[in-house]
Amino acid sequence: QNSIRITMVNFNFFLIFATLAASGNAFLAPSAPVSRMARLFVEPESRETTSETQSTEEARANLEKAVMKTTAEPVTKNARGEMVSGAMSKALPFVAAPAYLDGSMPGDAGFDPLGFGKDKEGLTFMREAEIKHSRLAMLAVIGWPVAELLDRGLASSLNLPSLLTRTGMSPSILNGGLGKVNPFYWALCISIAALVEYDAGQMKENSKNYQPGDVGYDFLNLMPADAAAAKDRRTSELKHGRIAMLAVVGYAAQEALFGVPVTEETPFFFHPIGF
Image (cartoon, rainbow, N blue to C red; front, top):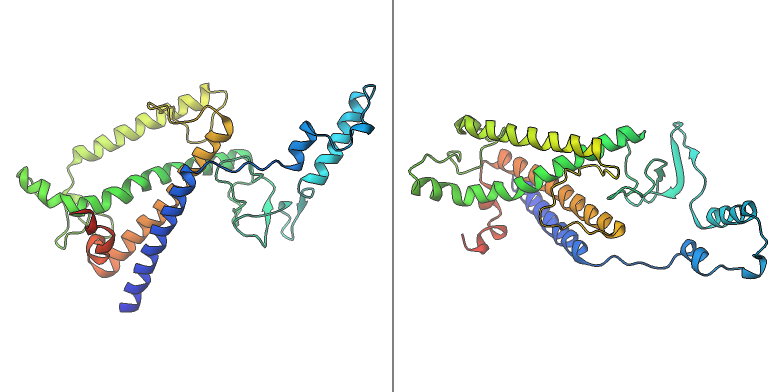
């Protein structure tokens, strides 16, 4: 059991460092090296061969040839008959990226080994599901330890029963204790979720430039107007969400295995903040 504890601590260290790395990337301006493709439009390589009398068809043919030299290999089929591009996956550099993961979608690293997004509709559905789970996980990864740190003190000051388990763990499916939660809370959660789903459906139907996960909530105008900067912002959200999903799984597994609150199992992550 000690070896399992060490493994869980190492896992928590990994999540902390990964979160810091993702947070740093979220605030750094993305590098923008000038590619050969960009130079085709601003500094043609062979101006002498391009005359003013060149036809539109010839210019288009020359551009297509240049694009073929600067982009990945043509789309082909792998041994399983799946369409793959010549470009290698960023997540798995030894595997060709699926053809439908062309880098246009935020957070796309060419990783879909089970082929969940073989068509545009399926890919959009999976991305929306990922964003929803990411946002819930980012809330849970904060709410879980904060509840363990503050619930008993707040409940005592308000003369209310604590919702934590006997050992001080947050209520969950594995920990138990969900039955003590007021049904009004669940009704409120369901109502908010229904409202968000309705707004998301309206955005999908009425927005010409709909992006998966866009509910139209940007009260502080944090989303940049520039398309490239907006893509970077969405990528940052996905990175943080993916790390949060791993962290919540770590919380649940650690408390289910040891029966100790995560704030006590790894106190150096939570108690130095003054609680």
